[in-house]
Amino acid sequence: MLLNVQFKKGVLELCVLVLLDKQDRYGYELVQKISERIDISEGTVYPLLRRLTKEGYFTTYLKESSEGPPRKYYKLTYEGRKYLRDLLQDWQEFTSGVEQLIKEGVNSD
Image (tube, rainbow, N blue to C red; front, side, top):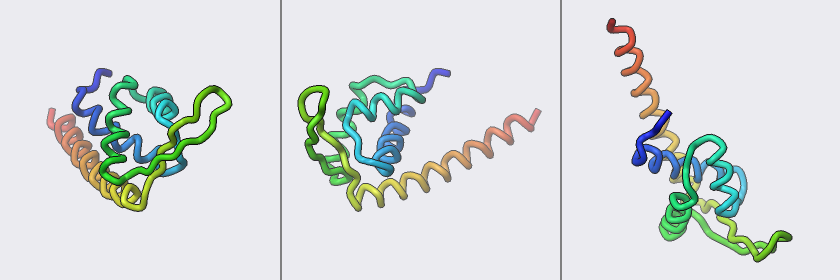
């Protein structure tokens, strides 16, 4: 299924926040995890991480890696968790509304 690029960008923010809610992760790890489920490019995740960090939803720290240079990890802040809860509520209301419309459309034949 091909998703509209703008739609994907909006959902991507929610995906990144949800993944960081469970544990701190580095950028490429986030890209890999999301790519397992959604077709995205690395170039869409890093600008999002920079913006959300600038907005205070993440903090960052460096951690040594056995596979090369230290990695920059992203950690959800209190504000980030609050923002995630708000986004999840919006998402649930949105998807519920879409589901209702789909049911009405499918059953109107």
